[in-house]
Length: 289
Image (cartoon, rainbow, N blue to C red; front, side):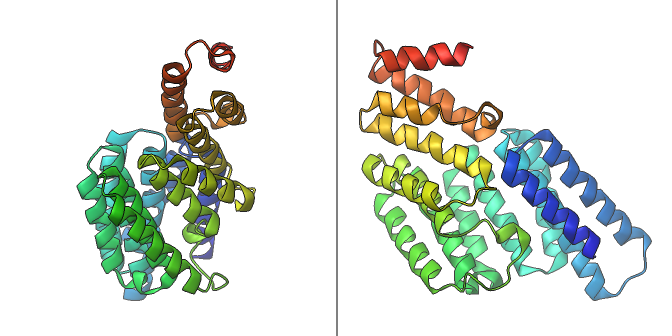
């Protein structure tokens, strides 16, 4: 079990560093298959079987997340079905919470915002959500999905609840490897996403700066995403030069998946705002190199 848990932590670390690459997805799937092979070939107590199903669900959930992050939504749909089934068999409320969170992310990328919000509600109903840290994450994600549905009041209310829960949480208590990413920096990244979707550009920029100031160095994918969202917020405030400077800080190796999509949309927005600006010309010339 300890070796499997260590491999899962390695998958999480690779995802934090590089984002949703094929390598992360396939490595997670290989370990999920290995765990299920153990489940089917080794005698074990019910308790051990539950832990093995939880690990299989965890690895499959990481494959699901990598596929979502990389924009491979057809593969993500397949992984979701397997992850939901394995999480149910595990009886582990924390794993069930995680899988519902990933389901919400997939539905959002599919444009199925009501389903994403329903996934948030399912996460809130797990026993894990009695913990303020889990509850905070669920409410922060719900804020993003309320914003997608253009329900500003509900989005801002959910952010308020998420922040209050985070303030009550014992952030020093032990937590699963997959939940170590959630802290004040991640809360503000979700708040940045919410504010940007609602067109609250000044608020979005403030959240972005908070995230960048407190984000752990190993969360490179999230740093790239934050810079991309910040560049959008600066375009929203009609600051093309500053926006290009921000977007240009994103390293080439991070420009894939969600970050690449945001930068592509950024290009359209800056051209629409200032088609003849030197900053716009600089951006497109750099992109062609």
